[in-house]
Length: 344
Image 1: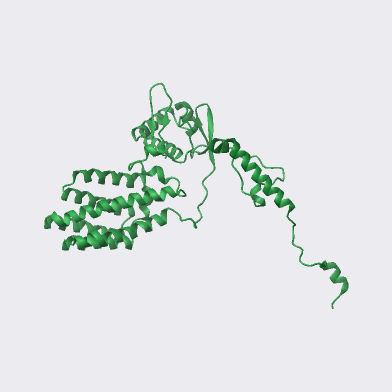
Image 2 (image 1 turned 180 degrees about the horizontal axis):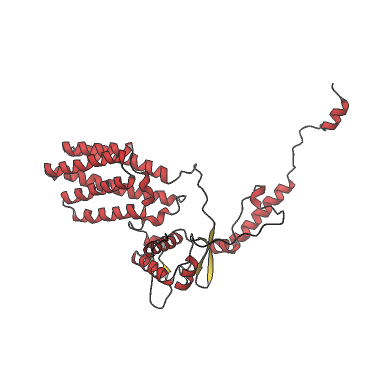
């Protein structure tokens, strides 16, 4: 069964969002016409128009009558709801930095609300909060990560209402949307023993009205769980990252920009077999450099000339280097001469 219209719009929206996040659009930020974009993603113009409208509603692009659609710079469009923008490239240090900031904010909100509930809430409300903590403790063992996340945000919403914090009610809604939509890749990583430990700590502290345990023990246990999720999602420097699939070009204006992933129903052009025996610089130990257009676009012509000069210098150094070191002053007899000489 094919993808429905709503699913296709969501797919195109996600692809354009990814292209924006990875810097695969024109430096001016302008997109091509709806017709060109529709041909690139192999969809109809109505689907492309709806996808761009959704991106505009989220603040990722700007649409004005009579002008081309323009992408909003990342430093302006990155919000809690658009946290997923920073997670498309897990090799970027900024992805882990922003995720750490998100988890830190969520821990602060949890600790502040539960501390306030311990000091002010009635026993009935505390028992209800402790019951949700028990449900989270049990779900961390048996249920999916998505279900655990739902229970955790249910705890935050109830705590915000019990503590009579309307501003925190809105903040919790934004935190939940950021995580369940923007950071949905992390959902399968939730759960396990670290989550059970902090849920059990919160349950006991709420039952005993132990504000000190909420403020000191709970943040440490929550951070242990969050760090485990971060380490599993964002590879460290020593962990290899699989390269991304080959990319096509995104239509922007009247030109194309290399580096945009093909849609699943757009086939890549077959490559012609190489009849020559040329060897790339990477095969002989040199670092390959970028294409001329890409290099000039990023660092100017001077950077391109500098890279060529460095490559030529490395090549000349390799040519002048002797193939084998001279191990002794006298030549070593070969196998044939030793065979003629016979055994000693």
